Length: 163
Image (cartoon, rainbow, N blue to C red; front, side, top):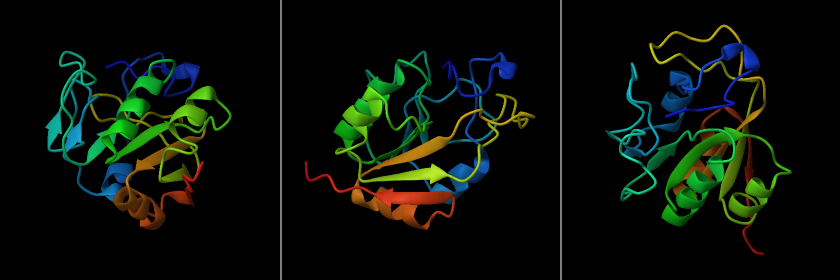
């Protein structure tokens, strides 16, 4: 699954893995609906890849979602919000229409990661350059909000979804 715009232009690659230290801090996931085909470590118990079309599949349990960055990300965040038990990793572009539609007033918490993470190549090697943009973790569901509050990855804002 292409994860375009995950990193700076230097990366010249469309598929990037979530750093394992981020996954460890968040705990076990039941499903990753947009997992890369090749991965040196699991992101969840079950994985859907590009060939499975994770958006068209049934989602069950706690979901980890590191969607393709860019215009397609909003589809994945809509699905995370609908599912209600997910953590998604996206660029921290808080002013965008995507954030207003799928995060502000919808999500239960947002964790702004400390620093800019180094994603990994599909063979597991850490990229030598960082993401090139700030990154946020979005929690859907109260239990996932609690995880973000205690994960130690950055500053977490607990959302009031009153409007």
